[in-house]
View 1 (cartoon, rainbow, N blue to C red):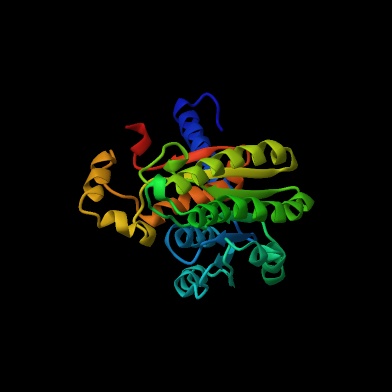
View 2: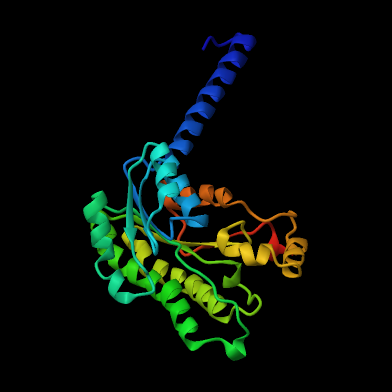
Length: 279
């Protein structure tokens, strides 16, 4: 840079800043890349799970989809259209025997595991005083025990590599009660607590455990609420941004938590709810 020439000095300074900005941007974006990694997504056949599987694939990850009914054709199409490998495992996660050796099976198919997304779940709506005990047990088994089981199964594989990402899917019901969903609310509160507990124990081993807490999203599971003539307008009126979330709007957050961009994030419960809890 020629010194003593103010114009040239100014031009050189601008060029250096532009160069620094460009390379800083490239480095930041590189942190979000998942090339060469494998993500296991439970409940990845449809809804939020499918959208997260798609987002992770777009960022470079191969996907192992675990679902109760299998036949995840649409999820396969989305993942393979991103140029990534897709593996499909059928398993009812509420059945302990079916979960046995599940992570080892996923590794046999994909070669290794870098990311575990504990997303599978469902809901039963009934007044607490008549809530069926069997439904209660199944909800806790599916949402909480299965999540803990798969996290335990994947831990030694991540420990050997010295890194791994576990993403648990909670809910805004991790913070509040909802209406006539006692088992679901209890399970989602437990997921938030278990996320923090695992993070405290495993963060020093390079394993990040975090939780996403979605609000109301346009999924098949939410169809009864979206079509309810009483509850639907009540819910919509409570959401500050004025609409339900689209499943694809969860993908970016999943990629962030699965990527190196979130390496210092441990035990967080990240809310994405259109402002619901802020109101």
